[in-house]
Image (cartoon, rainbow, N blue to C red; front, side, top):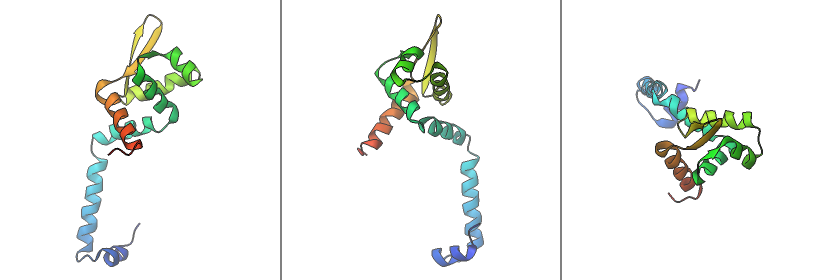
Length: 125
């Protein structure tokens, strides 16, 4: 646990205990926020090169699982695992047509998120 002495020394605070308690309460407010779970899920779903590649492929058009297995040279269960993570995060949506499963980016989160990621990566902010 960080020392209060260091806080006093580096931040030049008069009421260290009050400041410490405010910081703890601020952190708790973020940890107890209902959106935090969803935000973590989104970041986890993006933290894999295969999932990010799937998102980029789906930007071009809707694809069935078999197309994604060919594009990424991964097995169907592996692709399904990645798609499940992306779907649970709200980034992609799936639909069935007979025995085929097709996936596309969601309008609200998937397309906007990919757009922002590409902006950040190209330093256009």
